[in-house]
Amino acid sequence: MVTALCAMLAQAAEPERERIAAERAAAMARFAEQERACSERFVVTACVDAAREEQRMTLARLHRAELVLNEAERREAAARRRQTLQQKASGQNARASEPEQAAPQRESTRTAPAPNPPAPVRPPRSASSAAEQRATESRNEAAFEARARAAQAHRETVERRNAQRAAQGKVAAPLPVPSGASAP
Image 1 (cartoon, rainbow, N blue to C red):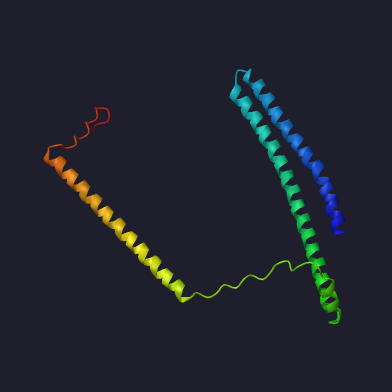
Image 2 (cartoon, one colour):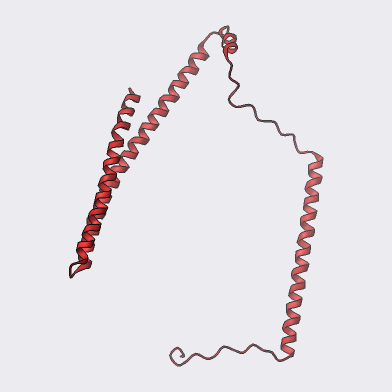
């Protein structure tokens, strides 16, 4: 019963979507025509604003109709999914209620492999991985110290260069005083 209702809703939804799309295209064309007509008038802004408001109201109405359709489709999909899950659960319950002697027969007729093979078990961390971790840490520490030394050398170079410029009398000239318009 649910699937019949869902199928009926799906069939009704497509023509409705096509109608909404056609109405949206007509609203856009109507707005473009009104805008062209407004440009020929003396008071263009008020005319265009009225046309925009009409278009906005039409598009909002169409959007609401589309939202209703989307909600109906979501509910339909959810109902189908619930029905599928119920059928699956009832099938599993029926299989679980079968007597145990029927289980070997069912196993022999089964030809498909298991859908999800068990995940491989990871071995626990060994001592070698701890040694690898210590080696990685020492490499990272050495790289950090090298970067710190390079940064210190750069700072010293910049300070020496600035001191040489100051000794030569090369001092950066201050910016000019702004003109009277922006001066206090």
